[in-house]
Length: 289
Ligand code: ATP
Image 1 (spheres, rainbow, N blue to C red):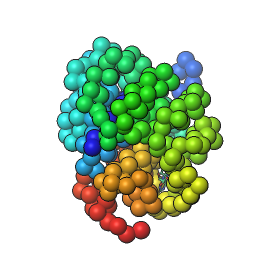
Image 2 (image 1 turned 180 degrees about the vertical axis):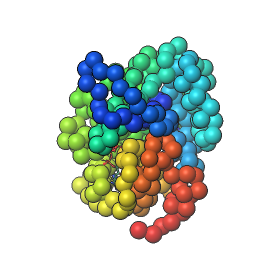
Image 3 (image 1 turned 90 degrees about the vertical axis):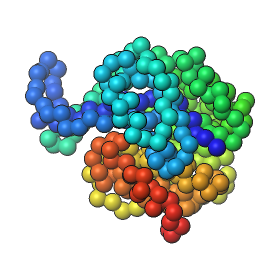
Image 4 (image 1 turned 90 degrees about the horizontal axis):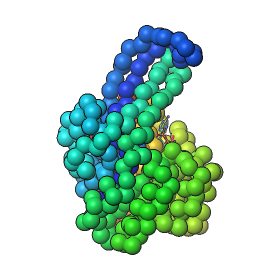
């Protein structure tokens, strides 16, 4: 069993500034950190750290950021495809943190946008029944739909985290086996009819819906420093916990997910805040609530 993640990978640069710049202004700032990010990469990294055979199919550009991404990803138990650099700038997020705690984010999507089905599909050639296709909202509606259709024809289980949200994604629910949405995505996209739906509600916790059955799992209390990546950690650990036990996402999977997300929110950064392999192994081996 293998998880294929089709999505984006970015370099996340965090800058500390006095205040969010006004139009026409020129300001000083300090670069605080540089991290791997992008929802596709985040989820794939955590799945692989949980011991799941994971392939991330995402575009890295032929620039210094693309080279840096590959130097970092080599430390993860993950296969990143394609192995060639893509003829674009790598996607990048510039996160501006102002002194009063406000922020502004600039994200480029050129590499993910230009990454075509022709670039992606050959890397799914080995995918077969029993494998999983996991997608997020960073691809166009058409590309996301085509990949789920392909997955269904091959008998794969499909998992969708429609973030960033696109109203058209509501049409994709008939192709989805497991939906993971936050409260606002659930309200906008109404994933009714999806066999398994997980609705996360930030520091409160998350709901698991199987048909008419509903279960709530409270969040694990944490001293939250930076909630970036909480949702990605939650999804990946929930999925890994269920896959490692050969079951559908259940109450224990949500408990493991909330424990892992509590680690992520207690640290600053994107991938550098994620639980390490040993932390995930300890957590996934515990059956306690
Ligand atoms: P993001 O897009 O910021 O990564 P999201 O909107 O997809 O997140 P959330 O619902 O905010 O997802 O959070 C997912 C899970 O992470 C929650 O169900 C909860 O278990 C955990 N979590 C989020 N915020 C906190 C917090 N402040 N303290 C403890 N756990 C948290």
